[in-house]
Length: 75
Image (tube, rainbow, N blue to C red):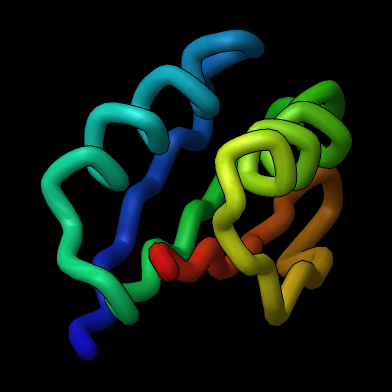
């Protein structure tokens, strides 16, 4: 299991999700992708995308004013 970091600060939706899709495609089962983002819409879009694709999520937290991080796990 490896942990990968994706920083999408400054990108507006749907780009944080598109960037995450591209990275998740190349990850191995059990790998984690920590996504840092500052798009308010992504607070709903990223967890929804993860659920629709069977990915687990954990450690969804606010990291600053209008900044969040979420960990998505590839099954």
